[in-house]
Length: 283
Image (cartoon, rainbow, N blue to C red; front, side):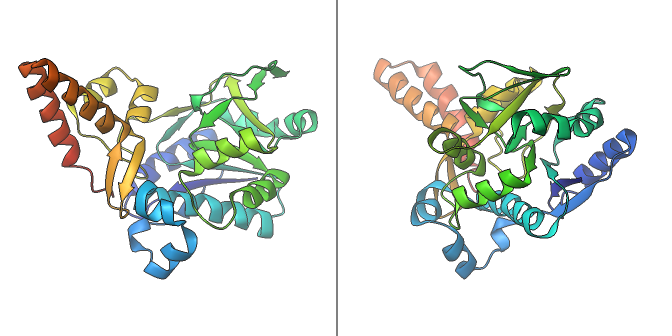
């Protein structure tokens, strides 16, 4: 099967790290040159995005990320003869058990008929249904799974995702898939045990990178999920200027601090906002 790593041309250090991991695990690596949103011509942006995405919701990084994933999925469905494909981004660490899981995929598919198996999840990753146990692998059907960090698609899943997401980008690809998981039939599974994928330290090349004091403290604590949620873009104006969830929270806290006349908190919050605003023009 193909194992595809999405990698920007400028991120040569990340590619080298992935190559070392793949060599150690004795598995083949196929690199996909990530689509750099800022390099897209205007007519492509107009054709590939909705009005809401282009004017209010998306930034260049999100659009490039979405198009990269969809191009790989399309190529797999139309050109590949493999039954499965594994797609991952270039900022992850793979467990030594990863190759064994790939070998087990035919058995897992026979018992679940999956469209997608995600190996890493943010969002609401728990389930209200029973767990699925196949050999030593535990899987669930998560409520609202987020992150397209690393996942496996079947051919059936590739066809369904193309049909569900359509031709126009609305928002993040992981949010779009998660909404499809809720409102339309999509056999989405999450591998919960063993854990085969973790995030490497460092800023994302696809989303919003934060230089704030609080975010950097969370990084020291390896708090992956809080960092990811705080960095989620809520609004993006004209594809360039991004307002993250954390910035929205800070604005609310600043309003409260001003009303209560907490001067020291006003100073700290204003400092954080300045640090964030220095980085609102996304990559």
